[in-house]
Length: 82
Image 1 (cartoon, rainbow, N blue to C red):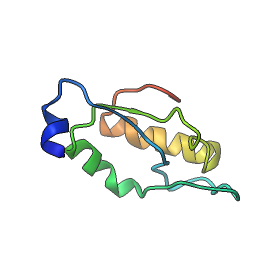
Image 2: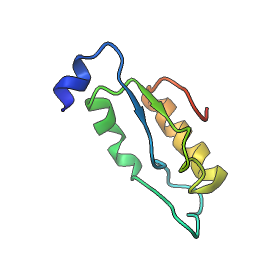
Image 3: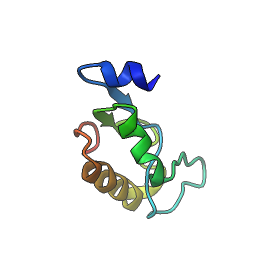
Image 4: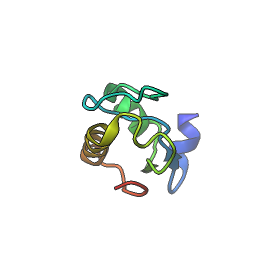
């Protein structure tokens, strides 16, 4: 799959989870991915990553801000919640 997504001019994906080490999980549902997988997203050729979805605040504001910082510092174009 990475060969296909890397070949595109622009690859857009929706982050259905946080990539954070801060925040507190929601008591109802908290989707989460360890931030160490961010390089895999880059390897896959994802250029734009949106966090504008129902899981944006699964780890609270601190988790969202931590995820945004990690993704921006990794080079993703911004859209959605930042």
